[in-house]
Length: 147
Image (tube, rainbow, N blue to C red; front, side):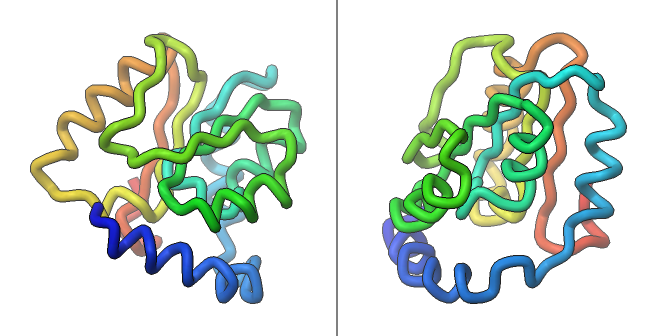
């Protein structure tokens, strides 16, 4: 992801805030949450943007959420709307976490910005960061390609 994309998301943040809730992800969130343990755990949200909808949903249910984004402006919004979320300003390709830290990882509408040849390395990191039996949800741009 280039610095240009970071600047685009920084500029886009105000527009994003004005259109909060425009995309209904409730069906995807509900389906994913049913696959997770009932007890609250730790969620890593890669490309967290302004902290919704996934961080908001899980924080309300007692989960500890860490959000990663490379846009400082989007993270300002995330800290405003989700003050209980730990935020990390970093490029997904470069961020590191200790092994087996997270019960679940989400990467919603962010991986398609990363060069295809980098995906394998990113997924290897994600699986290292997840606890055994951890769950991953990622999307590639449209509901039809939610995986």
